[in-house]
Image (tube, rainbow, N blue to C red; front, side, top):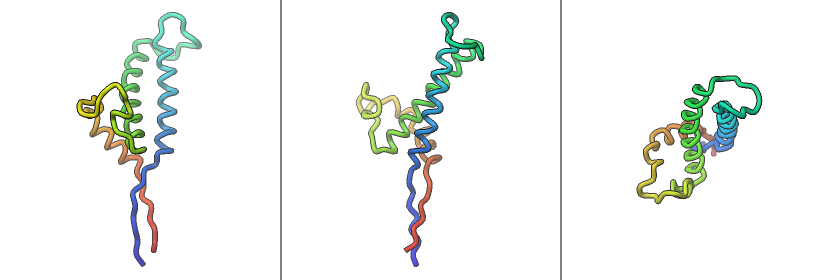
Length: 110
């Protein structure tokens, strides 16, 4: 009997994580306002601003990783840049680390 181990990517789990982070981003965007705040203030605007910026970078890396998992290139993920000098190449190490987090092994016994 032979065992084959195949690495697969769990895109559904990453997609759910992206949805949660995007919802948190919308919350932070509202909390940054000093006027016309919708709802109750839960954190100060200055704290919401830096958390929004940190979450924005995290979301960009997640979107890039999700696109690569689905077989897209950087220029297809973000259309504004060509493939050669794409700014996402700066985050390549973080993107690869995130993809490895969402890998799982599927074992088949033959």
